[in-house]
Amino acid sequence: MSDFLRSFAQRFAALDKDNLHQLRELYSDDVVFTDPLHEVHGLRDVQRYFGEMYANVSQLRFDFYAFDQVREGKGYLRWTMSYRHPRLNAGQLIRVEGCSHLLWNDKVYQHRDFFDAGAMLYEHVPVLGRAIAWLKRRLA
Image (cartoon, rainbow, N blue to C red; front, side, top):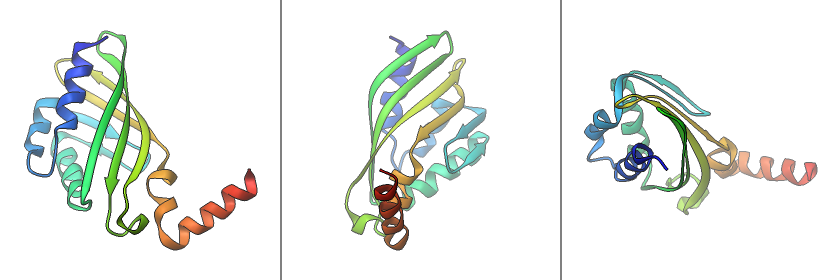
């Protein structure tokens, strides 16, 4: 088990809209952050991205439950993200399972998140959500 991954997860889970300056303790200046919806280059843009994300939700929490180091400076975190957005799912809590692939030296220089963007966002948009639910039933 990796001390680095466990420490990163603990510090990441403690982030909120008021302490995003702490991202500089986790990420290098040249970090590349990628998820199914965005690719962000550089610490300044990562801070801006997280700032926008926290500004648009009324609640956001990450629960990390697996810490797998593949080799020195490379590993995976598995997590559940729980969030509320006033315009999604009638403001009710949404939970999404995901995985982060991290590369690091002293700090993370590459962070790639894997999750179902439909389960996170599209399925909870009023009209689009009904269409996706219908399509899923048809394909099942």
